[in-house]
Image (cartoon, rainbow, N blue to C red; front, top):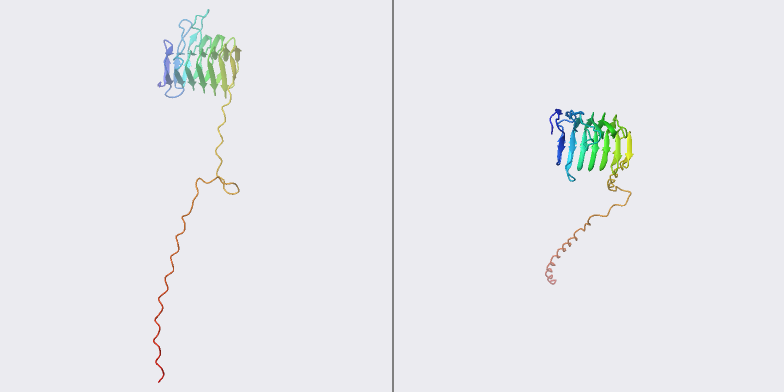
Length: 239
């Protein structure tokens, strides 16, 4: 977690393992490469390996410069370059970076998610002023990519096997050169809730168990009748 402030870089930040880089307060941290044609460097180079997972959260990313002619292998991704891995760029602002290709963000492989972020005011001499995808898969969700500049694909450029899909994001300034840019498939709907129990008027569900009352107790036997009274003595004969 980075404390609020602007961090001025003298070299690019190279990420080679799984890590979370997060601002203590979203929007309060700026990484500034303060690069130029005489001191070229990008802000972030992300290459954690194919199984690595990197999250970049709540940062401002600016001041990268990787323009070169002729291209020398270090001319893409002025702000961020992703080589491989699973990478999430969340609630970030990528702005005022320059490159030959991919002024703001370059993706050369891996699976990248750009979520609730803004990518703007970046420039590429050739392709992809905002986002340049030459390989890998990029999903852009609830983000804004605008006001970038390039000869082709001012905001988004997809070439070769690169794929880009957007969800809740309106992409303009798009150029496809062997890659694809499309809307993401809608997520599957949630299953319906279970029906409420039936109350009258309908068939009730079968009972979970049945109740059998205990057999009735036998009635008590009536009391025995009293023994008969003794007969009275016979009357004497008349005199």
